[in-house]
Image (cartoon, rainbow over all chains, first blue to last red; front, side):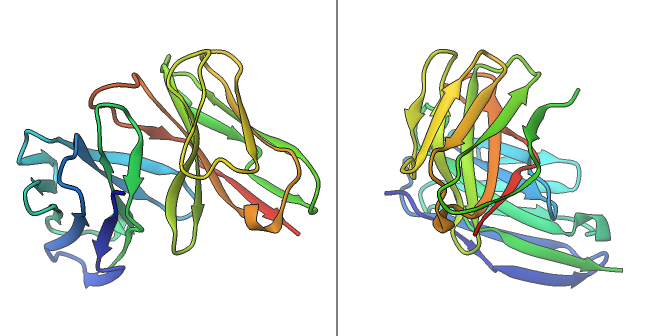
Length: 112
Length: 114
């Protein structure tokens, strides 16, 4: 059974820092990996989707990388802002069909 | 566009009561999902509907039933609520069942069972 782990569970940084969130998965035979953002009391917002054949995806200040062979993905946030404060979740899709296995998330706090 | 809309946003039930959580999407998506989110457990899939007219069990289906009423609507029913079903419930949708499809989530229903 696929297991997804996110480290650290919580992270606090001052505004302006570049930071990296980590995600690891136990079964490397994935179809894609997705990063989501969750604001308090809200649902999940899709940030980036990396297909299994891709190494990375970028959207604005966000860059996600994927190393299937080692079972790892990282989400890089450049020049962090207080508005980036949220919980970030990664999820893997194991097959061509759209069921996801989620990690427990990293809670990020960016202080002004 | 509203995206995925869930009702109600909050609900308190007594053990043994029944209720239905409603979900509707306005993106013409084919696939819909119900998750629960518990502290320390992450999101777990309860049921999903790959397309209109089909439903299947996810990881934690016990104690729940679903109905895909039409392409837009997917409801989750608790027949006899138990305290273990206290959770935040999320509905999601995706354009297709197969392939690289990001899922779009509603804002959740916070359910407390006493």
